[in-house]
Amino acid sequence: MRVTMSETTGPTVLPCRGRGFTLIETLVVIAVLTLVAALLLPALAQVREKARQSTCIANLRQIGMALALYLQDHDERLPDRRDLKRSLPGGYRPWNTWPASDPRTGWAALVLHPYQATADIWSCPSVAGALNATLQVEQWTAPRPAGVITRYWMWRFDRPDDPIPLDNLWGKTELQAVADLQAAGNPHAGRPQSPAEVELAVDPYFPGTLSTVPGPLRGRAVHMGGRNRLFLDGHVQYLRDIRTR
Image (cartoon, rainbow, N blue to C red; front, top):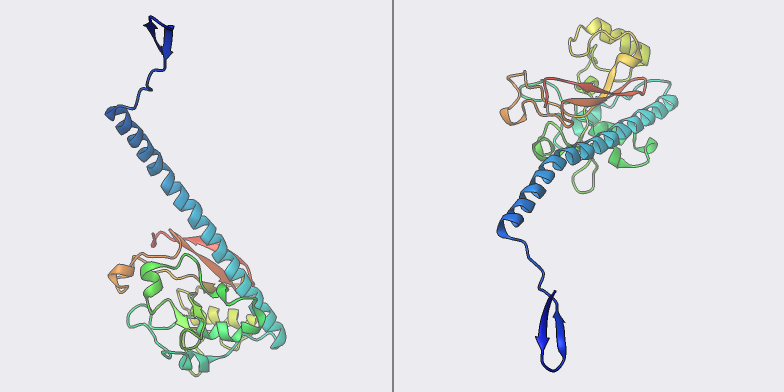
């Protein structure tokens, strides 16, 4: 405040105008806010991705429960719908390079439809961008928009061959599936000792170590640095994979 003198009224108190920010102070504030944002954004992105990964795990668990119900109704035998593998929109479309098979899951969404609460479980929320647009990832159960879109893989249901390959599970019991995978010698399937070691479904990934994977996809994965996997016994596990980013 400042005081002025008047001959008629005596001293008068006048308010002082507030002091504003200088240009330097404003720039300092902007710099601090920018730094804080730069520190927080990666953390927020990680939290968001963790939430999506949790949703993906829940999706795979529901797929596992739907399959368990299917097995109860079908003498404990896995589905054999190689006909759907050939007849879905676009047909059977093995990859030209890596691998020479078609692991997409449109057929499974149709078969397990009576046992699932919602068709949303067939799409991981982290699938986006280049991964979402690739033919190797998505498959429709019927011509769009009437069908359901699926974005998970089932490697052990990837070929419609007749007879059924040892490393495919069409129509087999869990015990037969384990025995056949042991006999197959497929390095990607391994030599499982129980259904708990048989990978049933997985979210998409493209190892960076394989030169046959197209450049834009090489090293890409739905989840950073790894993938969620559903096993034949119904449990879901996250696997870190240094071949993906």
